Amino acid sequence: MKKVIIMGSGAHAAEIEQYIIENNSFLNEFELLGFISDSEELYNKYKLRAPYLGDTLNEKYINENVEIILGFSNVKGRFKLINQLTKRGFKFAKFVHHTSSIFPTATIDEGCIICPYCQIGPNVVIHKFNTLNNKVNIGHDTTIGTNNIFCPNVGLSGNTKIGDNNFFSINSATIPNIQVGNSNIIAPNMVIEKNLKSDTTFFHRFKETVLFTTNEI
Image 1 (tube, helix red, strand yellow):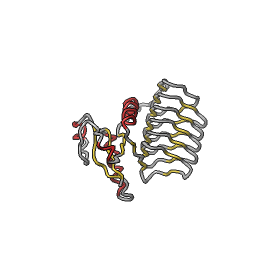
Image 2 (tube, rainbow, N blue to C red; image 1 turned 180 degrees about the vertical axis):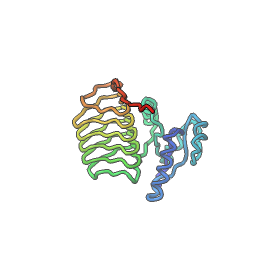
Image 3 (cartoon, one colour; image 1 turned 90 degrees about the vertical axis):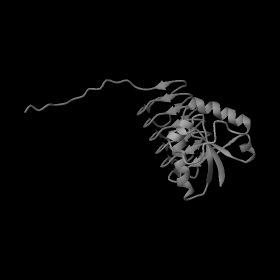
Image 4 (cartoon, helix red, strand yellow; image 1 turned 30 degrees about the vertical axis):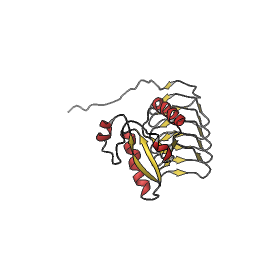
């Protein structure tokens, strides 16, 4: 079994711990040594089962071939931590939940987390440190850069190209052949219909008319 440590101790870290337990009932893939976090309070709040290991990742874990799993979703914080740990020589684990469907010609790099019930199509390329939360669907021939977060129910249509450090909120999507740059925030329920450059928050404002009737008694 591969030894791993989760960085973080909040809700997403708790989800990953449970996913590892579920996978291990089939695969015996990971031995979770514990959690590194600057918040023991969060560790206690979420009643995590593996030990709390403090707030500092010791160099001894490099010699023990321990790999790292990123258990939080703050894109900027992840980017900073990835650079720090990579320079120190740490390696990152790839996790794929057993309920997800991965097409044989898709490639997924280290540090990626594929949560339950995701669908990843033919010739998809997912580079390092991406997190796909529950029920994310990645269409054929899509390429995804590094350190992107995809919340539940995100759908990328075929031939989409995604850059780095983007955050896709719940239920967002692209039409086919869309290109998205770097460091964008996509609001919930948004459909990207035109290419999106970088450093943008993408959302729509619209007026909503509510029709209702009242029946007099």
